[in-house]
Image (tube, rainbow, N blue to C red; front, side):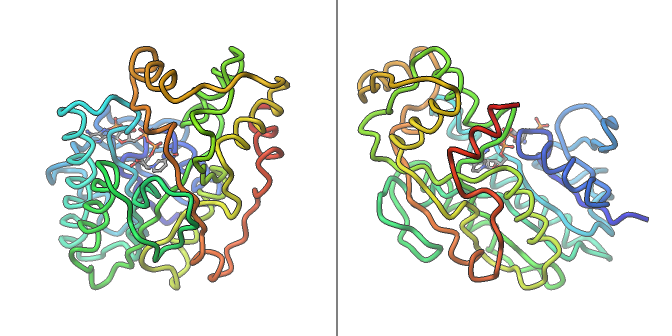
Length: 304
Ligand SMILES: NC(=O)c1ccc[n+]([C@@H]2O[C@H](COP(=O)([O-])OP(=O)(O)OC[C@H]3O[C@@H](n4cnc5c(N)ncnc54)[C@H](OP(=O)(O)O)[C@@H]3O)[C@@H](O)[C@H]2O)c1
């Protein structure tokens, strides 16, 4: 029988791509979701609420690994209610999955947790896993997330925390709104354009998760991003080239702030800040990236 991997919060952008990738690698996949129970494209969906134990626990028993991708999207305006849900959806899911693993007589051998490079805040300095953290709401969320995940060690389950960068893939994620802007001839440099984008291709992320699950030398915190971060100015230029668009006027910060709040209903900091991160530990462990050239990568994604 195929080994089974449980993807908590696996109904979203990263989870659906990962589910198909794992299935293609011979694994059985169960997604934990607040949506209806069903089987879709060979993936089983089991209902949970991300907060309390329930029938879904039986999917953890005897599973090969648990990967937690749960979290309210940060792509929203940071009202008090949204801030609370951004934090609670992340911490509650870590806590309850840990509890479910602790209750297993045959626990999964790996617990892989999605986190974010946003822990480094807004910086142009090169950040590896040991660099200092930044400041602000997003940084605080990331710090609490990591503290909760490592608060207690699990005796028979390896714990891997992936600080994920800006994931590039088809049909979703943070690239989708940028493609729309470029197509509308609004894809100029954002703000100063000096803020960094630490990007990676979704297929490289899927391979990182698989390595975290299968390779027993994977343990602890990793910067889960590609080895060639670029500035926003370079990124937008590459995206325009990939979409066959020429130079477009830059969008100054006040314009971006207004546009983000009023039209996109999201926080401008998501576009105006950035970080310059390196996957030091992944490279040390011999992880091989398939996508390191941004322009080629974007052309492949937008080319269909
Ligand atoms: N995409 C990226 O570039 C990126 C970068 C860095 C970090 N990450 C992190 O990676 C994880 C997955 O990202 P994604 O892009 O796949 O996100 P996504 O598409 O928004 O999916 C996240 C999933 O979490 C579940 N969820 C949302 N709010 C919840 C709540 N209040 N309580 C319980 N479950 C909730 C949803 O599943 P149901 O509605 O089915 O329950 C949703 O499908 C997130 O934690 C995100 O912060 C992503």
